[in-house]
Length: 399
Ligand code: SAH
Image (cartoon, rainbow, N blue to C red; front, top):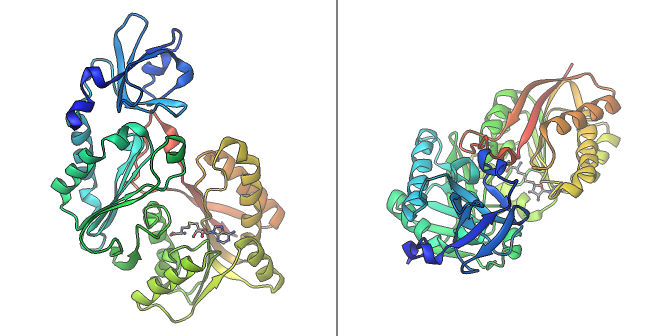
């Protein structure tokens, strides 16, 4: 059935507009409707071929009839796209992740969309459970193929197909998630030797923010004896690492009561309940309250959700990042450090640096950065699709 979707007569034919050949040379996987002169073939095709004006195939990929990104190119030039190509790419991505899994860590991003040449597909492994997140029509139709490969390669207890991405609505795909497995989706992972409860069904995103693994480890290094404020704490994972690193006090702050409960569970699971405060509050208001009380912290984590979900929201997002960073800096004790992040794809690293600079000026603090931060190496970014680099951050130090 899957192979059938790759049959020539079941593919969509897209003709590239003349003058748009550069797109192919640059190997960017997103082929927008505006670059297409003519379309033919079945409208619900999973796979599309892109042909140039002379009728030569120049790329093949996932087809999206309802998205402005009409095709996500997977192969270019003469390279064939078959079901085996997809299986091979998933297997290769899993093999590349083997180095990150050991007795101390059993949760890892297995497939990172364009970074693994599988635009629109994210697969996370949480110990015995695998979570699939699909963002476009073509790959959604290939779900049985993906499930087969994962079962064969990993034999997980269960696979959770998380269908809650807002973009699925635009792609006219179901928003109903699906559990294919034994028992229930929640599981327990270890990450750098620390334990966390992960619920793919109820949790945010696929259940846990794997992209911050390395930055959490950095927090542990800098936490010794520190008073730690963890803003936008979700699972409390930065707080758990800070406790493991010997922090003297930790305060986790999140607006979601469910997240705060999860943070509590995670601290308890690791035996780190002493000197931890779990606060349910809006971080923007709460930092103002702390500042008015002249509270001081030695290590502050600022890891908000994406404030800019589209290009049009960048200005508003910049004001949000500036505000929260300004207050974080005001709350910083002399010699203190901040780990600050933006996971908005539309806020570039350059812009984020300017925002943080402007916050430091207004806070009247002498700040320098010790490191630039990003997602970990299980979140590769394709050079042909730099948009995949969404997470950026700084480890800042107050002089
Ligand atoms: N640092 C976390 C991930 C943070 S995700 C980790 O390592 O796992 C962003 C979190 O911000 C979510 O849990 C969300 O509930 C919370 N959030 C969103 N808006 C908020 C606000 N205004 N104040 C406090 N928390 C907020």
